[in-house]
Amino acid sequence: MAPKNIFICYRRDDAAGYARSIYDRLNARFPNRVFMDVEGIIPGADYSQVIQQTVGTCHALLAIIGKGWESMVDGANHRRIDLADDYVRHEIGTALRRNIPVIPVLVRKAEMPSTNTLPPDLAPLSLREAIEITDGDFNHDCDRLIAAIERQFGEVRYQPPPTVAKTGGRNTCLIVGLIGALVVGGIVVVLFILGLLAASTNQNTAQPGKNPGFSQPAANPGSSQAPPTGPTEAPVSKDAFSPVGRWVVTFEQNGVAIQNPLVLYANHTFQSEEDTGPWQYDPATRTLTLSGWLVITIDDYVNGEFVGRGSVEDASFPVRLRRN
Image 1 (tube, rainbow, N blue to C red):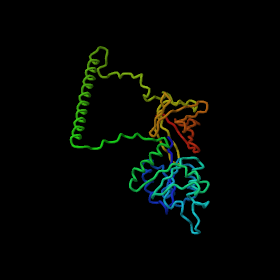
Image 2: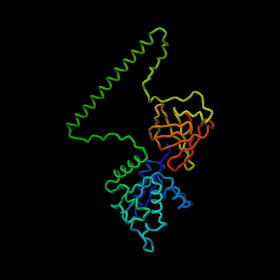
Image 3: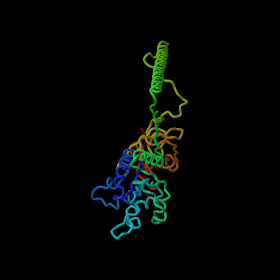
Image 4: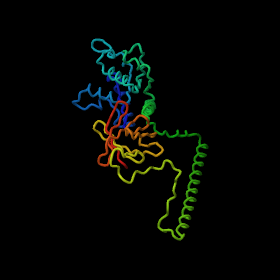
């Protein structure tokens, strides 16, 4: 799947320390997909051009709001947020116009600005649901922020059940005893099954006409999720694209090639490293749609790969698909 990116917007003299810490937590969960000006701009690059391009292609923006975010003034005692060239106003305004998720992140016990105190182009920000990051519960609050982004991106991970808190000594001994009994019982069951399998193998070996060196695997016609197999011959044109099978998909973004495995099942569901969901393919337009939001158009077949382009919202990027 094409990676979705996050832009962190903040005022350096208002919440730089919080922005740095939040960046570190997000980058651990979404590596190389989080942009913050200190990390994302190489020396010598045009700052305003890079910011404009990055905000224009990101998929979510975090507005880090501290206690001085709205009231800070310039040398002429004008509120920065009211200035047309204020970079914070420009970044948030661009994201709001693109109608992408804009998440206000409140730090230093800040409060959400009201509609009547914001410039008209930022007024919708006051209606966005905010997440507060506190000093006393920073890790837990960041986990809530990450979970919110995962929901927006459709990348919700499996959450293991909570661990059972320790209780008194007698209860602890009882739990340990139950676990031990389950483990022993599991071992007995496994040994019993292995014994049955061994007996079955010996019986099949003794039958006439059987090859004593090999056993035939049992068919499983009822499994709808068995990994599909591809065609025996490589297709020779773009019109021969047959979706069902295992693929290696290569996305190219900002000059970087990113490979991901992709399995398209015959029941029109797919599985990748980051997502699962339905897929549809239209042979007339040669478009493959995953989860209803990622569209891959097949343009040609070159050197054993289908080549084309992918699109997510307003972003477009080259894509290659190869049978795995």
